[in-house]
Structures are given as C-alpha cells and as structure tokens.
Image (cartoon, rainbow, N blue to C red):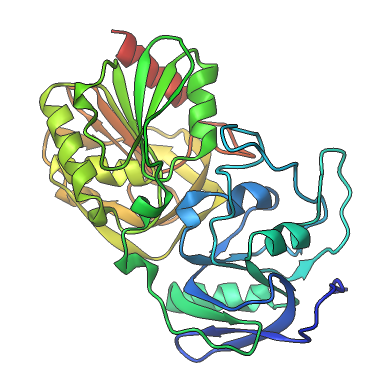
Length: 362
C-alpha cells in the first residue's frame, strides 16, 4: 500500500528524455527538478545514498520496494563526520521509489524521510513501478529526466557537462586527527566514510579542495576521493596527481579517484551504459579466483586496454568485465573503482586501507 503524505499535489510525473512517463504520488519538497536518472539496487542505506556527493546532479531511483521505514538519523553538525551520512546535505536532484513509508520506527531516528526531503528542498515520487523503470534504463541506458511535481516543467539539464566536483568539494583545507601517517585527501566529493576509515586506522588527514596544489604540504601519502560526473572535468586534479607520480608519492584512488589516477597515467575513460550503483557488485582479483562483494556508485570506467605497460589491472567486475582497479608494477600507486569504505556495507575490501597505509609508512 502506497503511503499517504501531507501534500496538496495529487500526482507527479517522471518524464524521461525518450518521452517515457511514470506517474506517482509526490512527497518531499513540492517542487520540480531535472537531472540524470540512475538506479541503485541497495536494500538499505538510503540516508547514505542520498548524501553521497557522487549522486550530485542525479535523480535517484531506489529499486528496493520499501523506503523510509526506519526514518533518518539526527542531522550532524557541519564539522561532524557523523555515521549514517556521507556529507552534510542531500546531494541528489530528486528521489523515485516504489513505496515510501510516511511512518518510521528506529531508536536512532529523529525524523521521517519525507520531512528531511522537505527541509532540504528535494522532490520525490512514490508509487512508481521501479521494476519497469529500472528495466527500461538497463535496456536503453542512463537518461536525462524531469520530476514534475508542481505543474512547472523545468528545462532538460545534463549534469555531465558541468564540473560537478567543484560544486561538492570543500573550499578550504580541513585537518582531522593527529596520527601517522599523514595523508592528504583530495576532496572530489569525498564520502565521510573514507575519512572515518583513515582516522580509525590511526592516520591524520588534511582534506583539500579538488584543485588544491597539495605538493607543498607535509604528508606521507595522497588519497584521491570519489566524486560525481565526468573525470575529464578534473584537469587541475589530474595535473597535480601527475606531478605527485613524478615524485613517487604513495597514491590511492577511490572511484572517481581511480579514474583520475588512470587519466594521469595516460589511460582513457568512457561512460558506462547505465553505471554501477549497488552494494552487491562482484569483483575478481586479477590473476586469481577470489571474488569480493563491493559497493559502487559510478557512471564512468577506465578503458584498461589504454593503460601504459607499467600498469596492471588489479580487479575486474565479474558481471561485465569492466576494470575495477589498477596497480603500478614497481611504484606505490594503486586505485580501486569500488568503495572499500562502503557504508552501510559490505566491508569485504576494507583491508585495502591498511594495504595503502603500509606503503605510506615505508
């Protein structure tokens, strides 16, 4: 049964760029929005997904049928890296679900999903056949879309034509912790979970803007974070990473950071048909039979065949064979397309942080 929300709008529409239309029940903010329509297959973790900066510019479709039943945790203070959130605001353009619960029950919850979306001005649509919508996107590929909830139809907007990283990155350096090794995290849309994992491992972190020239800082290694959009928009980051590579600085790329490291090495990237956005992507370690279950959120991938000969693939997606990781044959550079810091999980690959920290301690 579709939940009943306190709204003056009886019906809303999701319109795709090919003309396909889905009707539903509006909730959240009573406004319209445009962006790129993508789907996520996770069963839990909607607060983490909605605040993930990698979803900037996107209308997110959640395939799990019941959303909102455990509410939303208390809002973190601006300087907090609170569990349950990957940034301090909702990042998506809009939300589409099959059934949104107007009621919630969880001992940590402070408010409903509907109230949270309203407070942050994000529109949402419930009662949509998300199975049919997901099959449509899988067949035809990721599309632009519009959520029309207030009768006003916004213009089409392609977020991939913009530098979304500049929108979600910090504006000034921020320091965390006092441990060793000392790490620079290049914030291209960094999830709070990455920072929490590094701090819990005993490192100190200097989080810097995406275009910050970090080479003058005092550090033992550099992490290039996840983030939204086309990695080729991050030319300043690519240039700084290329200079760091020339100095043999230990480097770890995660998600978008993986693509940036590959571009700095001389490889190419390309846009996937519908991207990988889930908590259950199987990845095989290259040259072995071991499979890891990973969380992912990206729309671009590295073309492994364009890698220079001194680089080798590290992980491969078991579903479609796309590249999921890189290592340099002799220098301290490595990267993964998936999220070893995954929240709410799985944490099969969390050991990769310690692998990188060992390189930094040397």
